Length: 110
Image (tube, rainbow, N blue to C red; front, side):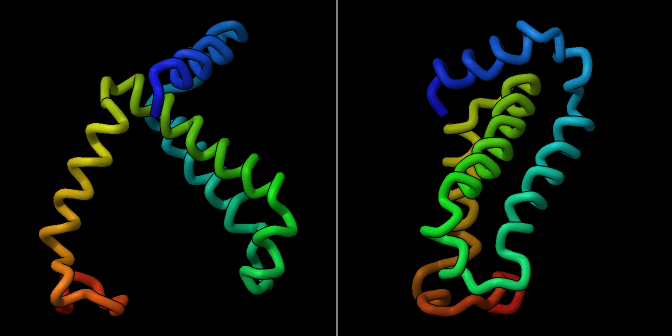
């Protein structure tokens, strides 16, 4: 995530003096709650009934998840781009193309 975006998120939070409420535990809880709101848009529906129909709501809920994740990463001193790339490198080893192509099998069962 761009540094300017993280700075804008933190500026929004700090202007309202909300940092006091944003400890790692509560930020992690907030990520889960916002992810649940994203998931709720799909509950009891087919994907095509939501995607392209509720675009604004999908964007808002996904943004909420990302905002809390960015705040948590920043507060913990994690660089989002770096940790995502490190995780992708791990996933490349866990899910080699020759074993995983077109399959949804978990790496422990390959």
